[in-house]
Amino acid sequence: MEAVAKLKNCPMSARKMRLVVDLIRGKNALEALDILRFTKKEAATVLEKVVLSAIANWEYKLDRTESADDYDLYIKEAYSDDGTMLKRFRPAPHGRAHRIRKRTNHVTIVVANRIPLPSEAEGAGADEVLIDEVEEAGEE
Image 1 (tube, one colour):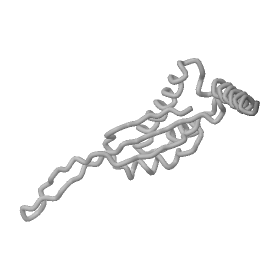
Image 2: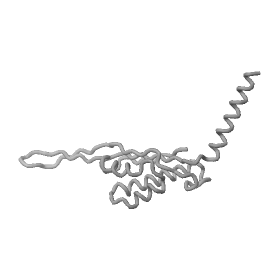
Image 3: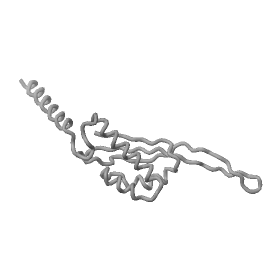
Image 4: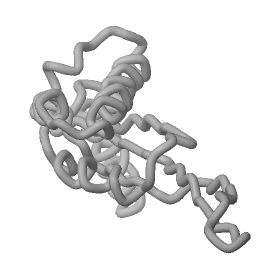
């Protein structure tokens, strides 16, 4: 099972955010939180909140019956895309103007469990039994 957390219009360039996002992609969720906690970039503090939100979303999808610690959550997907850009002008020498681009980005984090849930394991077995019964009925 997967859960998603998104942060839209974060006031930072996507390039700066990607430096930190690349550090946690594919890592265990708890390991990713440790990495973000000790990374000195501003993007790490914002990204830590998004990862915590994704973990909370995963737990909420299960109706708060299971803990995320028991199912070995990991960062399945993590990416940062360009957002809208605020364009401003700044005075320059000789009466000219230089453009300032204030960039934003959108961050998406997807967490998934490596250890299958009990409902997923039971559901797969029930489907296989039904398929076998249908095949046997077709042979008769």
